Image 1 (cartoon, rainbow, N blue to C red):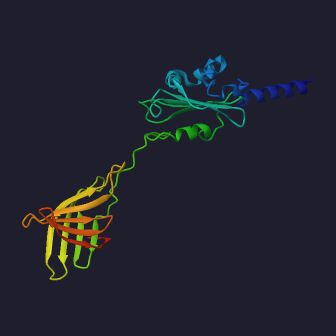
Image 2: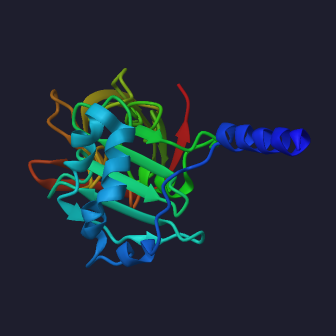
Image 3: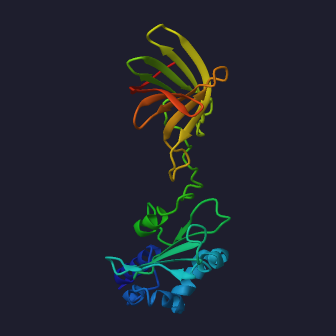
Length: 261
């Protein structure tokens, strides 16, 4: 009799010390459609559990559910829902995963967030819940670790380029020290092959129109202020054009190559 009593007491202690989730949620699939996703927050048991988990942060989390994304059912019967404020998906957004066994995973961001906030009652979890992690990857400027700094811009245009034609040899050097901005100043070092005469000119870089912060070069333009001759070096159809008073004096095709100073 005493042995059976001890066994019963041991089993009772074992059960009480195990990570048991008292809440069990059935029919979570009912919230796995866009039409019914908002009804998840009408489930009093789930809402109470989320409030108890998030405490003072609950309002920040729940306040983001203005517009709902497409929810989905998990393989284990859990459900994923997410939402955001109208037109502010990158600034005010939340995501929630609820499992049938009562495990809850919540994540959210607000404009004041230094990182994506994440809270769960799953004490055995070693990493971010996968569906929450996938949701978080959509953010461009913030992560679970903190703010994501934008990649620095870089002018990929070669600082030094060489133009060779039958009659001319030209070296063009971009004249900017900061390579994180579009450099639109250049220096022209030209040599006429017939007599070795050289000329050094300052000019500008003219770029193509594009959607990027730094666009490719279309052509280089230089002017000899003493003689008033203008020199145009084109990129896409490599050529050197020399003109004065809008009259073309020389046009010569050639080839471009990149180099070093």
